[in-house]
Image 1: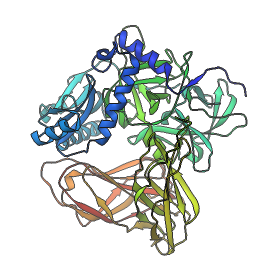
Image 2 (image 1 turned 120 degrees about the vertical axis):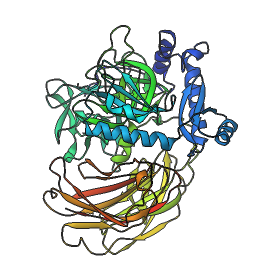
Image 3 (image 1 turned 90 degrees about the vertical axis):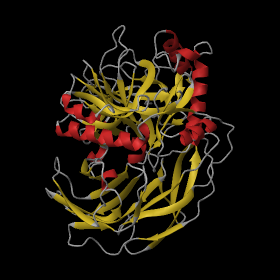
Image 4 (image 1 turned 180 degrees about the vertical axis):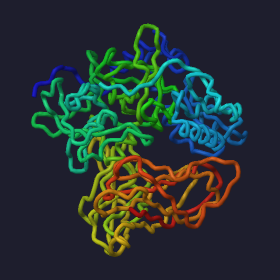
Amino acid sequence: MKMRRKSVATVGGAAVLTAIAALVTVGGPASADQQQSAAGPQAVLQQQAVLHQLSGKLSPSPAQAGRWIADGKLNVAVTTAQEAAKVKQAGATPKLVSRSQADLDALFAKVDKIATADRAKGLQSWGIDPVSNKVVVKAHGAYGALSGLGDGVQVVQVSTTFEQQAGEVHPGDPWWPGGETYCSVAFPATDAQGNKHFITAGHCTNDANQAAYGAINQVNKLGTSNVGGSRSINAREGDMGVVAVTESGWTISPNVNTWGSPAVTVTGSAEAIVGDAVCHSGNTAPKWECGTVTAVNQSINYGNVTVDGLSTTNACSEGGDSGGAWLRGSEAVGLHSGGNSSCVSGDAGNSIFQPIKEALTKWNLTLLTGIIDPDDDEAPTTPGNPRSTGTTSDSVSLAWDASTDNIAVIGYDVYNGGTLATSVAGTTATVSGLTADTSYSFTVQAKDAAGNKSKVSPAVTTRTQPGGPSGGRTFANGADFPIRDFQTAISPIRSTATGKAASPFKVTVEGNHTCLEDLNISVVSPSGRWYYLQRTGGTTCHPLPASKTYTVTPTGAENAAGTWNLRIGDNGPGDTGNLTNWSITL
């Protein structure tokens, strides 16, 4: 199939430099970009990369309360003089604040509870702002329901309304879901079998098994969106979906469509932080737009749905950009979700993206990248501490410590004995289709973009659980999972029950923890819907009961078969505990 445009791929990202140069000189954010205008846009990207390396080496601590880039420095909010000294010695700039991360998390939980109960009426977004050391709420009006939460919650009045924009495969290209309005491509990726896909917005892929086209009026079919109905999320969990590229003649490319400038070759993925200079590509004017990240991990009210964990920027966007590509230099950081849908003169805009790594991990996809250095022959380090994190009668869940590389690790291969079982982008994997009550040995191998592979990790041996589900409709996972400060334990259960899940269904959680008020507990269905069982909040700690049963009414028809995941996140410091067992009755 003929391509509609010609462009020359450049690893260095000349289009990014050009766009950031324009941003620096024409009224972009002052703190992150203008102060380096004399040195030029290349200096912005180089220094930004150095600051992210510094951030990666700086250990997290309960005495820290967020990080951001400003004035060419990595700033870290700290609550003690001792932590300030440690941060300064590491090369970052400490900013003494009064509220710890735990304090901010507790305030956010209270705001989130009010917003959820009120169905977010009148609210545009809410989330933690590390710069002001507050939870910032953007609302249409004063929103008096938050008045009793103190000066740690700041209400900012706004007049705009966010909306989810509707609309060889390149990031930023348009695509059409069936006969609907077009959306945009985020980033191509491959699965463990090498099949071709691209990631885009979940609200563009909400229809299961929908034909996807590369042109309007249902011509030039390229593949199928949301295959099987399990590859699209548009809910609290996120706004992300997958399109399978299956039709003859279509290929996928890591070269971002910059609409007239030389293409940017994607070299990897990254997490954005406040102050990062970023650019996005989509199919609506101005098509290629840059700005600065203004907030991360925000809850956004789109009116029809509230989505957690999104990032906001001061770049503009319009309808049809949904699902498009967000970049930090040549690294993929997100998929376009929505915004104010305005790019009029003088309007800085407010665009929103879904972090990409969550989508890659959820569907075990590997981002398609260009080779960073053809002369790179250095292999990644060996994955460390491989371990089993849970078993069922037919699956084993694994985790390991991340490898490092002179350029970037792009994924991991997991072997069952000497046979490749799966390939993943992150440091966890679940191997399914196993035999009950059988011992298995697994190893892990890291790989980089140049094709170099690490040494094989030490083997981890584990045994699947015996038999099938008890009672026919009750399934359990008895593996122990530690509940650690500021981490999330995820325990899977594979259900083989037929038909629809019961309404309501029951979830029983067994374990121990010294502070129930620090925990977020939820169960995620095979369709991707999240059901919260326990939210953080409260000033007095109570222990997690040894066994607690929750009754859950699904928000829509749920198929009983598939993988159900229990998630326990500990959002406070200084407490310990373990998940010892959980079960679900469907």
